[in-house]
Length: 276
Image: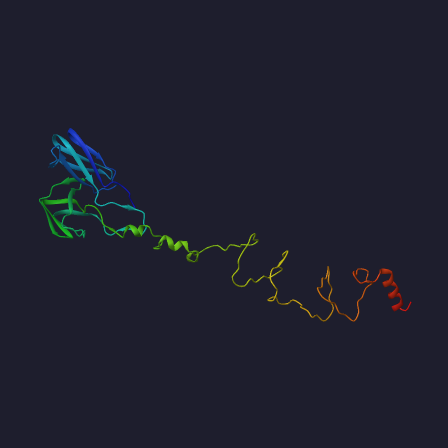
């Protein structure tokens, strides 16, 4: 939370009958008070608002002291669920009036009240009466035209420093959970290199190629198991740990080993069996 601008601007002067104060407060309704070297408030001959950044103070004689220019309240920069709960400066125009009642609703019995004429010069009214915490009355000895500025020193901020740390009214820990994210783009994790543990089912539309598969294969479906009936083409080696029983074997048997029969004998037997 930072203050956007200064709200009080003091400016000293020495042995002069006029002083221009550049306050840069950005307001046409500043609060201006003048003090002498003895820190007692003095009433200048004239206070004129030159523009939103400067005022001119005139004296009937050469004096020394300082001018204090203030802006009621100030602006807090940023949002973060912190906002100024009410206005702190009220300006009300009046035209040819001998009495003006300003309803400011600042909820204070100690408002700051200053009065300016139509030339933007500060004037001293006959009386300023606090009616209640929400209104004041200004009386003039003769009908006047101008405006009254009523301000409340400082400001009221609604919220707390904790709220300033929140994002969308959520603490930082809320955003550590990926499941709380919204509008997250879809990410395709494949092709994937490395190890992965999948808890649940893996559905593949297509082929799965691997150098090896680990497991007993008991959960595989669509796989032909043994005993097997029908024809089968095996491209590669068939290793059998045990016996192979068949009514016949097709081939010349040249690749058989450990039969105890020489190749020439095998050919001879084959020739006899074929009726040669």
